[in-house]
Length: 140
Length: 140
Length: 140
Image 1: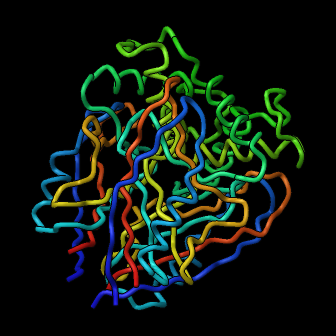
Image 2: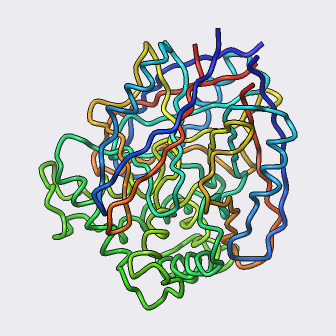
C-alpha cells in the first residue's frame, strides 16, 4: 500500500566544496522499510546545491569545484549584490547552474544510484555553513 | 489517504528576466488542503526555465540574468539555429543550464522553502511571452 | 486508485551528442494505463545527462553540444582527474551543469510536454556508451 514519509536533515559543511551525503540519505530512506518508490531531496538554501557525481576518485570533486570557481570568479565586478562578500553572488550563480532538488527512484529497497554515483551537498560559500535538506519519500 | 491534484498555470512574462511566482504556486498548493506531499512544477517551453533563488534583494535576480547574458551572448557566431533571432539559441542554452522542472516537498501544509527562497520563472527571450507550467501535487 | 510502476531502460549512444528518447519513454509510460500522475527519469551515470529541449530543428541540439564543448574544452590543463582521457573530466562538468533527473507530470494519459519539447539523453563522452535510466511512475 502506498504511503509517504518526510524529514529534515542538517549538515555542517567545511566551506566551499563537495560533501558526500549518500550514507545518511540512504540510511533514512532504508529506515522507512520502503521496497520501491521515489525519494526527493530539496536544499533549503540559495548558495549551496545538490549533485549526483562520481564518488570513486576524490579528484573529480576537487576538479568540479575548481572549474566552477574559474567560471564564476569571486569578486566579479559585474555583480551589484555584494552585501555578504565577494563569494556571495558567485554562490547564487553556482546554485542556479546546478540543482536545488534531486529525485531518485527506489527499487528492491535501494536507491537506483549507478555503481559510481554518490549524492553530494555542494557548499558554494567559502565559510562553513549549516545546511538543511527537506526529504520526501513516497512508495510502498 | 494519499491523493493527487494537477493543473496548468499560465504566466505573462515581461521579457528577459526573472518573474517571481511563489505566491500563485503556493496558493494553488494550499487550495488542495494537503498536509504533506510533493509539489512538482514543469515548464512546457525550451527558452524559459524554473529557478529557486533568493527573493530578499532584487539585485540578486538582476545579477543572475546579467551573468548569464555575458556567458551566453546573443548573436554568438557559433550558432547555426538563428531562425527566431539572435536571442533564440542563447535562450535554449540558458534553458539547458538551468531547470525545466522543480519538485518541492510540502509539510505541515506549507512548501518546504527556506526563509529566503522564492520560486521564479526565468524568461530567456528578450520579448514578453506567455508561459505555461504543468503542476502536480501528490500527498495527503 | 494510486499505484506506481518502475523499470530500467538502456540506450546505446553514438558518442557525444543528444539522442532523442521521447518515444520509448512515452511508450513505457503509456503501457501502464495511467491517466494522471508523475513520471521520473534518473540517469545512472555521471558523464551523461538528461535534457528537455526543442525537437523541431536538429540544429538546436548540434548548437547546444557545440556550445558546451567550447565552454568545457577537452584536455583542459586545470583538470587533475585524467585517467580515462581528455574528455573524461569535461563530461563530469557537463553532467554537473545539466540534469541527472527529470520529473514530468502526466495528465489525460499523456506526458505534459510542450508542443516543441522532446526528451533527450545527452552523451558527454566522445565514444559510444550504453546508458541506463531508472524510470518511476506514480499516479492512477
